Structures are given as structure tokens and as C-alpha cells.
Image (cartoon, rainbow, N blue to C red; front, side, top):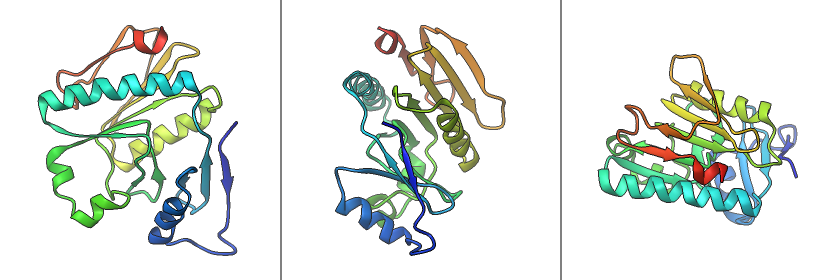
Length: 192
């Protein structure tokens, strides 16, 4: 199952509040929205991808509870990015001071902020090209560090603000660098 893009713009252009309500009214469907206002219906993940996503989230939550440096978000969180996209990374993290600077109403709905870090774990149904485009959207929106993990090919693409992407073949771990200080993701939970 692949993502489906629907263009309703000639019929209705959804405001941010209307898009939020559409998502609330259809909790069993995961929507994203591109900068053109087109609605993207995302397929659910399979068991293997969901299991690995849960393990990754656990590692981030444990690290974040110890460091208290920010907030961790799962794939159900949709962000209203500054470049007009509404996206839901598989894992995201925002520095605490940036998160706390948002007004309560901004934090309650789709936060109007680009995360400092995003991770996309490819599902078998994901298109590499579309996922790479999504990673570039994140970087264009101000994300500082991003990881695209393709477990099928055991390949990782690292995106850093203002730099060319780095491609790693079968790495054993990933460092959070200066964005996620002290965080190391053991990729055996992904490859295994």
C-alpha cells in the first residue's frame, strides 16, 4: 500500500483549523499535507516496521528522560512546518527551550515549529524518492539533523543543516552529534 495524494484545491482549500479537524474526525487515517495544500493519505505500517519504530522511540524517550534536554514525539504527531507542509516524522525531537517558547494553543494542535531532529524509518511500501524528498522538506523547514533509515538495504542517509547528505552502508550505530548530545542509536534493533 502506498501513500495517496488527493487534490481538493479546486473544490475547497482547507485552512489549518479545517485540516486539523479533518484529522480529528478521522483518527484511524493518517493524513499529511504538502505545501500545495494537497492531502496525503499515509498507509499504516506493518508489524515489523511498527515493532522497530516502538524500539527506536523507547531509546529516544529513555535518553530524553535522563538528559531532560527536550521533547520526543512519535509518528502520530503532525507538525505545521514553516515551509507550509504538515508532516508527521516517525520520530522527532525538539529542544526544550524552543518547545516551551510555543504558546499553549500552538502546542495543543499541530505544533507550528520544525523539530530539531527527525527520523524516517522506511516501510516496505515507502518510495525512496518520496522519502528523500520529505527529508529535504524537513531540512528546508529548518530541521538541524535527520536520519533516513532503509532497513531493506541497510542504508542510512544523514541530513544536516547546510550540508550535503551523508550515506552510510550497514552502520552499527548512529550518533546524535551535537543536536542530541550523548544519544547513540544501536542499529541492531533495526537490522536484526
